[in-house]
Image 1 (cartoon, helix red, strand yellow):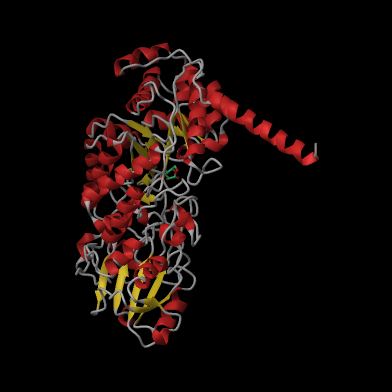
Image 2 (image 1 turned 120 degrees about the vertical axis):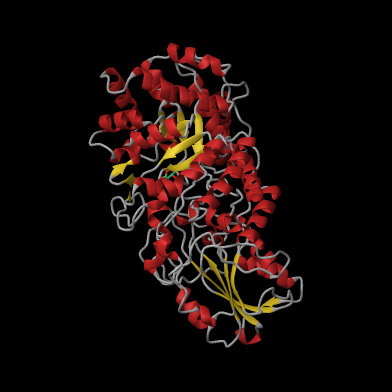
Length: 605
Ligand code: GLC
């Protein structure tokens, strides 16, 4: 027998061994003591749990930092994927197998309580390869269509269930007040009423499919003042310096609406209010959220956010839990945090009553997710369905905002176009951050999505039109400019110009080149927020803001060629200068100031 044959048989044997072990690890064999069949069983279950079992339930660890055996040993309550943290291969089957193995391990813990798995499905189930990537929230704010939001909530839930995930750290109800903030595109609008009207149907859509929701970040995340950012951030995780009453006036209505829609959980916010970190502020996380707003669900901390609220981990854990945090998102220091909970309870720093209250909220959350029912183990489904793509395409069309049109749009389908600009043929740019990796990818073919160029080609090639290679042959120039992908603090900037640090490198070069052809120019911006265009707008015959449309670029051409109308309106003020970026924070002066465009602007046809 040849050497290669022996190697091939050996590899086959290894593969069979792994498959059989996976299969057995996907089977529920023995299980621990606690068995919850109804909500009324929970109080007794808590009485039957040990301090160690209770401590484990208040821990949420990152999938890459915990072993299957540790899930059993420490009675871990929850696991999350940080942005871009995926099994390999990144397929529904691999996700389901990973989560099933975790739950088989959890059931074999002394308590036998299953884990709940959470992800950031910010704009579709964006960690998963080939998942449908919807427009980011800022575009959905422009669409301003509650029915569409419910459909997106349902479609996103289906693509989460397809990979075995139960819990979404969404929706964000941030009402960004300074668009220099790196999380502006995760915000639906500067106007909290528009935010509230959109997140309720989204929550309803997710819950209707059995996905738990997390309204975030409570409270004041979009109200932090420029240059107060945490560590070296300009804005992100900074300090709200206006009065607490003013901040609450701009944020509370979205939380009241979300609580009314039975959002499953609320995530505490990194920011501080007048110098006090929210994660350590009982007046917000308990007095306001519990006593005034009557929120009954679970409060989860943000990613290691408690590390900033007190000197030592023991003190951080005690302060966070006593302030109102019920589950600690401790991706890496989960074991030290587990020990800190036990230390604090044994030393009376955390009362037994507060511990049991937090445990109960975790068990109720899992009950609501159906995790105590039989059939805990999941089966893989499919992502990137035609049904989802159809909804995403509609969302793209509705999100576009027409801001100038000198009789250019709608385009004829037999038109000859010379397409230029760094955002013309790149699905990664269209998706932006929180797409397969935390910061997003510049991958032009990301996820087999449809770029603007692909979409233009499809329409033109079947209607006698053409993307010409010589501008002299063109009827008009289409100029596509925008921003690089980014997320969170990495998107903070003090420069919103077209050649700012987060703008695409060749924006200005393309803008100046377009002006040399002496042809009509249609400019399309693909960015996570308004950028400064006052030096160029007069040279453009038409201007469309496309935000971060995601994988379904054909939603853009549906509108450009008149198959669908423009309906989008600006969810944010469009500044003329960097200094105007936070004008929405001061509405007293707002109407006395000339902006590039006002909140609510948008043409149609
Ligand atoms: C991040 C974000 C939060 C997200 C969490 C888990 O830092 O602040 O929105 O849900 O960590 O990824």
